[in-house]
Image 1: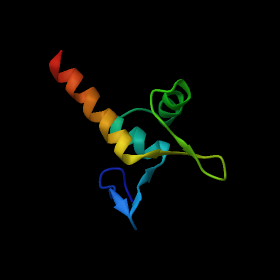
Image 2: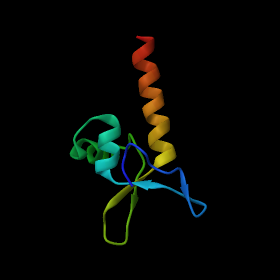
Image 3: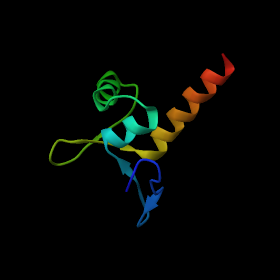
Length: 73
């Protein structure tokens, strides 16, 4: 799976994105995405191994909100 063509659902479950995939969508560094999660700007889930994953629906909603804010300004 790539960040440019993620699947919305797989086997009826929400698709989870890695920090790198989220970073590609926002065109920022993956460390920035991690800082956003730490600050509470975006929700994350921890895998059993301790890695962060992000719900695709939440990421796309935030991206749409930020894109609309930029267009309005």
